[in-house]
Length: 247
Image (cartoon, rainbow, N blue to C red; front, side):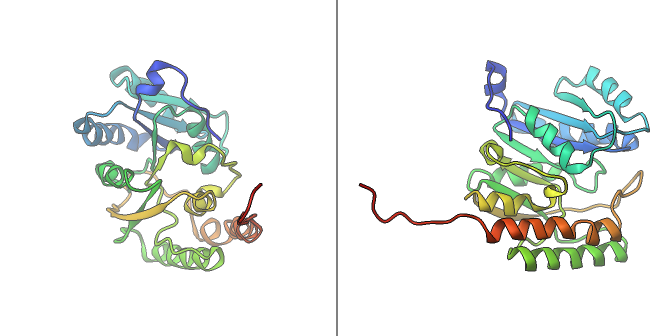
C-alpha cells in the first residue's frame, strides 16, 4: 500500500519511475541518460526511484554520483537482497507521482517506450508492456513462454507477457494492495481483482549489454509456481455480491 501525496511538491509530480537495482552498476549511466532523453520532451514533472536491492558491485555509489547531475534521481537502499517484489513495494511507498511506471535496470526494456504506456494510461488504470519480439537465448524464451501459459491458465487471465516489468499504473491502483514476495509477476491480475482496467501495448526488447540475468528456469518456472497457486486461491475466493435492494 502507498500513502497519499502530502506536500505541494508531491502534488506537482506527475510520474514516478520505480526501478529495482541488483548489481547493475554497468548499466546505470546509460539507463539514466535514456530515461532523461525519453521523459524530458514530455514536459512532465517526474522522479526516478532507484531501489538498490542489496547490490555488492558499487551500484549505490554510482547512483549517488549520478544524483549530483540529475535532481530527478532518488535512491532507496536495502541492507541485503530482499527480492524484486520488495524493491517495487519500497519504491511504491515512496513514490509521489500520480502515475507510477515500473521497469528493469538491465536496458532490455527501452525507456523510449515509456511514452507509449503513458498515452494509454489516460484510458486505462494499468498498461502492461508486451515484449512481442524477445531478444533472449532460446532456452529463456521457451521458459518464459511456458511460464506465461501456465500463469494464464491457472489464473484465468490472458496477459501476453506476465514477466515484462515495463508497466504503468495509476497511483490509486496501489492504495489497497498488500504485496507479498513474488507477487510482482501478477500485478495485472491483482489490479483486475480490485476492479481496475488493464490493457497491453507492444514494446521493444533488446539484448542485455552488461551483467547477467537474475532469473533462470528454476526461479522462472518452479519458484513462482507456489505464488501462482496463491493468486489462484485468492481469485477463486474473492468475495463478490450484488445488492438488489437497500432500505
